Length: 451
Ligand code: UD1
Ligand code: CA
Image (cartoon, rainbow, N blue to C red; front, side):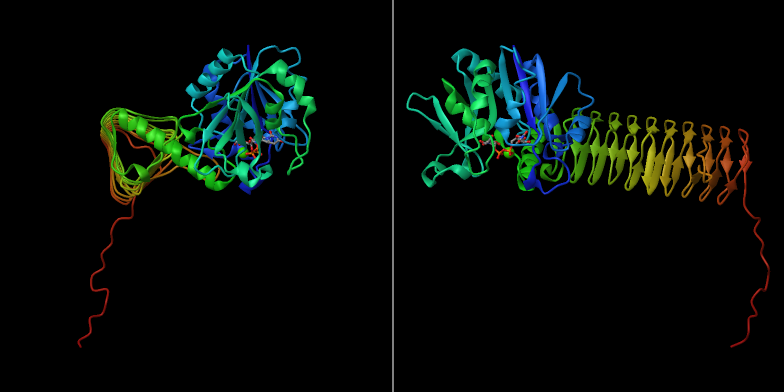
């Protein structure tokens, strides 16, 4: 039997933020989401989350995750006090308890599996994860006996100078035999520099205590301030980009690009400098993205080219060319082989295959057939100040430069709209529509006086 407990009640004073620390985002997911996800493979029977500071907000952020039990810690009197709150909910539980700090987000699932395995094989009362760090400052130091068992943990601020020289640190990740931990938890004291109850003090009370040293010390990076947040982001970004480069994606300048966990790439994608992929984004085989793109919760088919553009919550079919300087907003759907050019904004509109919206347009709440040519500066006037209305343009139609289509309006197939028209009425298929003042020319308007 396995229960996991994530400590997420602390305020995170050193972040200097209104957001609880465990809700700070890292590559698009919050710290606490990452910690919980890292345990999924262990299939725990119970998942307890200790919340306190802005508890409701933390609970709210995890409302989509089933099976979490929230345990309130009020006030927050240290990590030992946090785990004491489990004495009631885990009364009678006879299995192992994996305790994770909510601010240690880079752990690999394999490492947790190894920790659990080590714990079960050794029959220890507690097995903790450790690492050797070049700069151990801020971390609790782990002291090991000549037999290799752990004799205790001393927090950085409680260490003597000699103790501080020890660079074997506590990751804040522990596997306890719960009945043994439960027996010693009530004995914790606040006799330390912070006057808090430290979970780390239980280690010296439990026997045997053993440790597992991680090979990749980056995994145990804890986040206490914005510097460490940025360092962890860099580690995560590096992991994500390395993964995708191995899967056949070329990054011209990887350091200038960022990915989310939910980004998926096909093969032979080329990503030019300064491209950012967020949320759940799918990029098809052979796409060429960048330079300078932001793509969020969007899906691009094969062979799409995008330059200097923003695409959010939009769907783009194969072989479209987008940009430079295009903006596809939520629910923009492009069929195959479309062209969307400079200073074009498309929102909640379906554009049929082979259509072109090449220059200076706003297309909103519209449905365009295939092979439509939208002239430069064409605008769908979709909003009357109260409601949004639809524009429909049939296949093969062409709008002249600077047309305004006042919705609701339907243009049939193969319609031609004269340049500079402002149309307010439907146009049948095959017609030419002109909605502009006839040109007047008055001869000899200016007196031409002799010099
Ligand atoms: C802790 C460990 C330290 C270890 C380091 C690893 C203790 C006493 N020290 O120190 O040995 O090297 O993590 O990153 O445990 N929390 C609560 N309730 C509280 C206090 C904290 O839930 O009352 C939560 C925080 O939200 C956080 C986690 O516990 O997610 C760790 O707390 P933090 O104050 O950051 O501990 P550290 O000083 O980093
Ligand atoms: Ca910490």
